[in-house]
Length: 256
Ligand code: ZN
Image (cartoon, rainbow, N blue to C red; front, side, top):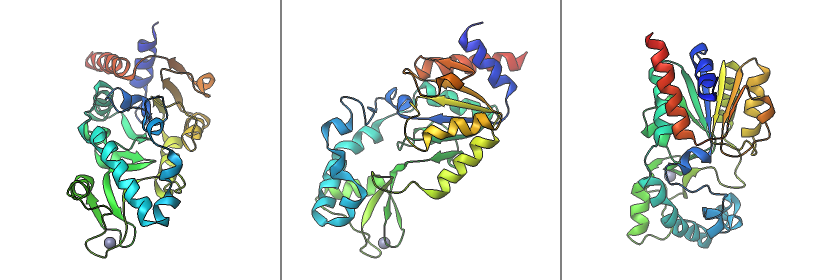
């Protein structure tokens, strides 16, 4: 039996699938992995963009917003790829419980997974928050203000600091999302990793929570992960072609 068949079998048998995604799915949409050569942290020093630095001075915030002029177009111009659409298909055929993602690009929502089925562990680049009053702005609106020459945009309601709704280095993990992700992982019947190397907390522990709660584990990732030994099916291939083939196979079996 080939691996696509093995994966399709597990999907057919499951009704509550949690898909866990990392940078590997977004690179197939042309967003470079932050951490890899050629990625954003190859060009910029991550120590310059910590949460503490952002809070500590006007000059650092200006630096951050200048950096975002480089970073934002990559995100906003990216389109979902066949991997994202295959996951959205799992939702349409009522197999998907939720997507838990380390990505901040919003491409799962773009591909048709409803907002309330996406748990963003590292926040989202699509929105900007006022750190004082909590007012939310579409990111593009604030980027436009920066392009128009505003060096350090502030909240128009309270003049508080504005920061993209991503989780920066040094910023605590969002509590609600992390708890929710753990609860969903422990309640699913299939945990499907797509494009995460599972090395960063809390990503690293989610598959183990699922597995120890009785779920099956599938890992689709180009490179090895520390949890490969726990996988019921392990596929070291690209996400898009793999998940597309799986969804086609699952749908054809469901029609029979
Ligand atoms: Zn405000």
